[in-house]
View 1: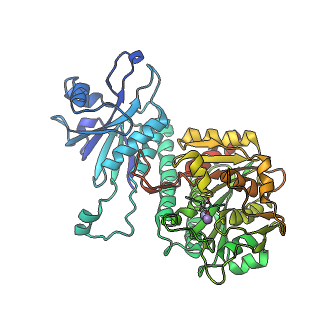
View 2: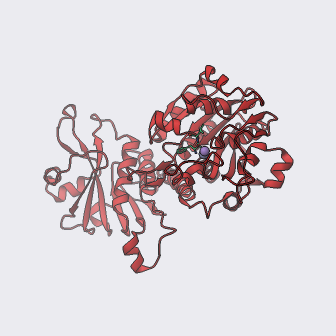
View 3: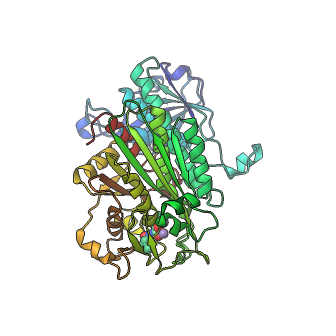
Length: 513
Ligand code: BES
Ligand code: MN
Ligand code: ZN
C-alpha cells in the first residue's frame, strides 16, 4: 500500500512527481464567485504571482467535486507537476472543509497519480482530523487490484500501473500527537479496508470458504485475535442447519469463523456478523445469466466484518469485538438443498426453503443465533442480502434495519460521520405473515414487494431476546460496477468497514448505548 507521512516542508522544496492542491467553487456569500483556492495552495499561487486561480479557470477548472486539472509546476519547484483537485462548494467563511470532501478529493488525486512514485498533498489541514481524512482518502483512492495481471516491466505498460508509492501530507505536524494518531488510524483502517476489497475482488475459484477461513486465521494470529473455525464436521455436530444447508451443494464445504478481539479495559462488547457467500449462483433456484457475473461479491459482508475486527485490534480499542464470518458457497448439485426442503437451524427453529437463492438469511440466521448466545451489548450484521435494497436505495447507499430505533439512528449517524451513505429502513410487522409456512416455523421467502425488509424481518427472528441489533443490507454499495469515483474504485469497495470501526470506537468511548 501507499506509504503515508506527515511533513512540515513547503511545497516548492519537495522532490516528488507532483504537488496536489485543492480548488473549490466559490459562493457569493463567501466573498468571491468562481474558483477559490483552498488553504495549502498558497505557495503555488505565490509562484504564479497570485494568478493561479485565473490560470486554472483558463484551463477549465471549476472546483467541482472530483474534477482534476493538471498544470506544469512553476519555476523553482522541485516537482514537475501540479494537480488541482476539486473539493466541491467552498465552505462559508471561517468554516473548514468537510472531512468527506477532503477524503474524496484526496482519493481522486491519488487515483490520477497511479504509477507515480511520490506526491506531496498540499490540501487544507486545519486540524488532525483533516490529516486523517486526507490520509484515508489517499490510501483508499490509490488502491489497485492487480493480483491477477501479468507482472514484469512490459506487462505493466499493457495492464496498468502500480498504486502511488508514497504520499507526503504537507503542512502536517509530524511531531504532534493528535496528527500522528490520526495518520496511524487512517493507515490501520485503510489497510484493512483495502484487504476487504482484495477479498471481494478475488475470484471465487481462489476464495472458497476454506481459503477465506485460512486467511482470517493467519490475520488473527498476527494481531493477537482469538480465532475459532467450525468446519463441516463441527457445524454438523453443533446443528448449524442454515450454514450447512446453503453449503450442501458445493464441493467446497462451509465454515463458521469466530474472531474474538478482547481488551482488558473493555466495558462493552459488540458482535459483528458477516454474510460470506464466496459465490452465489442461486443454487437450485439458479440465477439467470446476467445476474451471476458479480456474485463473487456476496462475501463482502464477511470481508467487512473481518476487516473491522482486525482494525479494532490494531487500534487497541477498549471494547470487546467478536466477528462472525458465515462462509459458504451456494451451488446447485445433486447434494444441494432443494426448494421445498426444511432446514433445522442452530436456534432450533425450522425453515422451509422456498428459494435457494435466498441463502444469505439462512447462513446469517445461524451466525446471529451463535452471536446472541454470548449476550453482547449489540449485534450488527452486514450482508449483500437483497436485490430489492438496490432497487430501493441505488448502488451507493446501504439500508439500515434494526430492532431498536435509537440503535438504528446511532448506526446511521456513525455511517454519515465516516462518509458511508446509508439510510434507515423500516421492519413493517405486516410483512411477517408472508413468511408463514404450512410445514415449518418460517419460510425463507415472503412477499416480493419490500423484499429487503422481508429479509430483515426474517433475520430478526434469530436475534436473542433483548439484544440491540442492526442489519446493514450492503447489496448496492458493496461492488462498484460503474467507474471509480472519489476514493471508491471499481469492483469491491469495502463499504461498512468504516461504519463498524466507528461503532467500535464510539462503544469504547461509552458514547453508544
Ligand atoms: N446475493 C443476493 C443479493 C444481491 C443481488 C446482492 C444483487 C448483490 C447484488 C441474494 O442472495 C439474493 O439472491 N437475494 C434474492 C432474494 C430473493 C430470492 C428472495 C434477491 O434479492 O433476488
Ligand atoms: Mn442469493
Ligand atoms: Zn446471496
